Length: 201
Image (cartoon, rainbow, N blue to C red; front, side, top):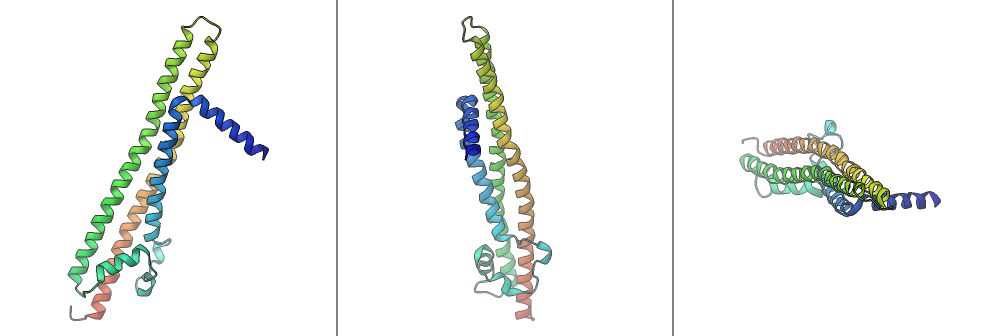
């Protein structure tokens, strides 16, 4: 309990040293990671954990609900036409793919904005430091020290938000490629199923 209290006190002290931009960085970090985890769970709901063991013939494996089941129902409902199936899978790729691309780009924008806000805090802290150096009273060193702290803390906070977010975005890009591979595999299985039901096609 004492360690938690000490950690909380240190975090509060760092927050106070960061100046007026710390709430902005906090809100930005929460929104950034909300988008990142939202994308992660969306992709996780579609992409199987092990693509190497992705079932080719076990048709019942896709009927357990979720997004895969929705895609299969949309692409195969009320028809046994391979051309219509291809058309609907292409629509899924375009609609879902464009959504994922937009969200990934927005995530990159948010991640890039974090160090820039930290840099803005650095400039503010340095200006405060120079103001302190120009003073002649006894509060001079306090103002200089607080200005340097603000400059360093905001820069560090911006980088702490941005670096994991950028790494997360690259992981999500890789997950998006797995998603595309998954959709292509579903299309292949669907076309094979139609061909088995209608050998004359």
